[in-house]
Image (cartoon, rainbow, N blue to C red; front, side, top):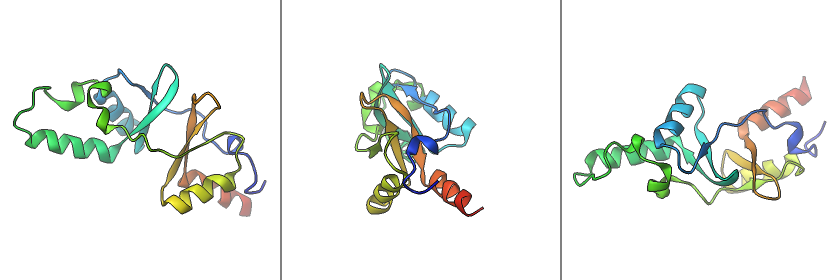
Length: 141
């Protein structure tokens, strides 16, 4: 194995995601239960964005201080009602891309994950910097 290996060879199995029409609370519950920092959002199986733990905290704090809150508690609203919580300018790669390509993107863009999609933009998974580090460590064991 080398850093030229395909991303599909090191991608963790099983990705958690939420649908665009799911409640925001569902994304929050998944992050808490699975101890993850981000959840991809799909619509009809197609990747459309990511909800991050940080974005949820920021929006929750804003809603607390927003006296004109007509939507109620933010967690019980649909993701589609609060589209601004979606990070849509996410970098993605394909399963057949090399681990090296993912590392280059993460390094150049100062990010700690890339989304993995197929050619039709169906969600395949998320590759994190930790996944890459664990892979590199395995090369030295």
